[in-house]
Image 1 (cartoon, rainbow, N blue to C red):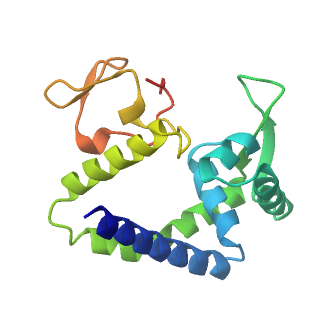
Image 2: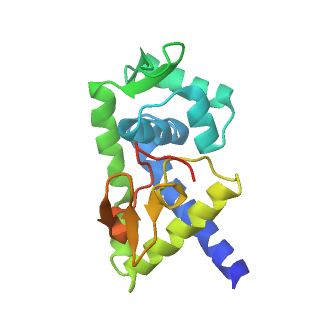
Image 3: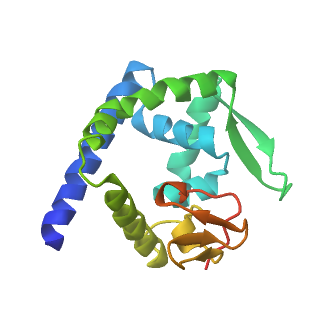
Length: 180
């Protein structure tokens, strides 16, 4: 079973990457630049954090970010929490391009519409990701399932916000995340 699931996850990852690469090239970017821009449009970060998140070297991330800056799609600003560090944020043009890039996933979204138990699939994949984070394979991104504030009493409950959470409410990148 695990072997078949791993092969399936690999094929799905290949499909997602091919779709992103095609759309990125159409918009004048390479896939790595597109991936970084999409992420930064949701959550501004620095080079080291991005390198850990995407399992790339800091040099590779720096090179891709420098290209995005030269194209006028990113700007650097001092990190409000640590003034020694820089965070990268998309410019207005970068935000517009990130929005255009999001269309790459339309075939995947359409295929997900045919899944019989989307909530079960969502929970299964969230648990898989949480296990990889706990093993140190994936960087911590603020996943609810790895947060010390999450309680599992008759469902999910955020003790910090004092609210029940439906599976669709579980976040991949919560700004209030505290590792468990």
